[in-house]
Every structure is written in structure tokens, then in C-alpha cells.
Amino acid sequence: MIVEEIMNTEIHTLSPNNTIREASQLMREHKIRHLPIIDEKKCVIGIITERDIKNVLPTREEPNSSLFDAPIDSIMTKNPIVGHPLDFVEEIALTFYESKISCMPIVTAGELVGIVTTTDLLYTYIELTGAHKPGSKIDIRVTDKPGMLFEVSKIFHDHKANVLSVLVYPDGESTTTRILSVRLQVINPLSIIEDLRQQGYNVLWPNLPGVTL
Image (cartoon, rainbow, N blue to C red; front, side):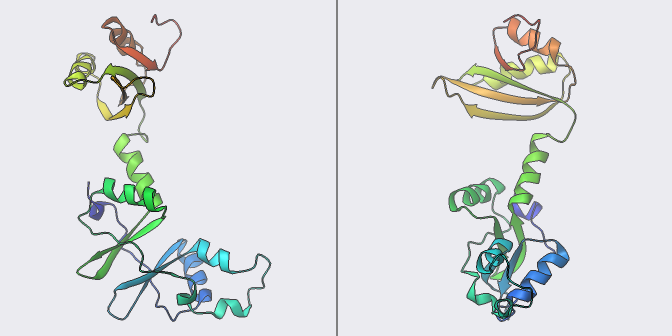
């Protein structure tokens, strides 16, 4: 999946000469927490967040304080990290994690075309994993070797279970095994769990009562 598919193209922006008051009002009006700051050529030169505004203002300051009339460029983050519409979502998520940022302007040909936030990434994760759909999650410890996912998936096929998502995690207890976290469009996975265990797979979750290990 690329950033173009999840970015928000309805972007609210300000110039560096706008005031902190104007930024605060715009955020409240549109219920947003991030504002790209652009120049006359629509090039991104900064970013301001709700937290930036809260950090610069005293907690008990009156709304008519002169601090609100300071220009945005006095508190904005200059030259923020930007992305491209064709960047992979996974790469953008890694940048968010490593750089500890909460939003990223998306730029093409030097011009702002979108914005991505941590909320967008969270919604994308939920959709990709199928967590918003009714179903069951099964965690299985498997040997770390080629073909294991195919072998396990044959059991789901035999039970006519639709696979919503598959995630593969490192196993903290061994370097020779991995954890398959599978979300199935099945409300009662009992028969699938029984079949998995009968065929020698170590089902870690759910550890249902009455199912022999």
C-alpha cells in the first residue's frame, strides 16, 4: 500500500506570518491537530501542532494574551520531514517511529498535496488486519522454515475459513521459531484449533478450556 491511498488531501494550511491565535482557531474549527506552514509557492517550510501551541502558552493564560498574536514561525518546526505519494506506508510508519513524529506532509514536485498522521496509520493498520471485522485471532508457534505458512493455511482451507490477515512475529523464546498471528472470519474457531493441535502445531492463543494440548 502506498501513501497516496491513505493520505488526507483536504489540507488546511497557514503562512509563517499568521498568528498563533489564527492557528489555534483553525485547529478548533476543523478539529485537527496539525497544520503545514507553506510559502507563496505552496512549498512546505514548517509544521505546527496542537502540542506546540500548548507548550508555548502558560496554562492559565487569558485568551486575549499578546502571546497569541506572535507569528507562527516563532514556534513552528522548520524544514519538517516530508514524504512522497508513492512512498510505501510501511516506510512512512518506520519514519514516524524512528523520528518520533505525529504527522508528515506529503509533497510532489515541491508542492504540498496531502498529509498523513498517526491516526491515518492506525486506521490503516486496523483495516489491513481486519480487526474491525467480526472474527477470531489465533496465534501459532511454528518452525522458522520455508513453507510453514502454506502448510498451516491448508488447515484453514479445509475448514473453509476466510483469512482476514496474517502477521509474523519473532518468537521471544527461540530463534528457530516464529509466531503466526492469524485473524479468521470465524466466530467459533474451536474445531480449527483442535485440528491445528492434532497436526502438531503449538497454538498459543486462544488457549480454550477443554482443548487438549
